[in-house]
Image (cartoon, rainbow, N blue to C red; front, side):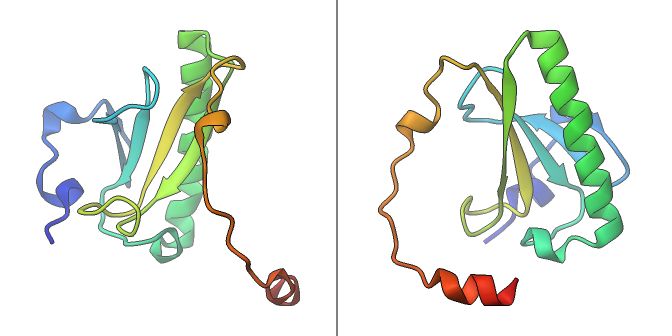
Length: 125
């Protein structure tokens, strides 16, 4: 499968960019102003992104969150990381979703609760 981030983004789609990331509007926004932070290099998952580039990502998330809150008068931003497993035909990217206290965002999220062995996680930590 061809990665749309590597092969289908056009220069005019890019709103802002840094050395390792580009910012675009989400094509299917959850809320007006929904942004994507997309790595310029193809990484399938966050764990593949080199540490120094992850630092840039963290700073970029803070910068963009502040800009969204200051300019759009929103209450906050939900940050969600996705990759090819959750968004077919893409690579690692981050969603920045503008939020309002009253929008019921989490009320609409429904998952079947899986029975997971949390003791394994606690031991790994």
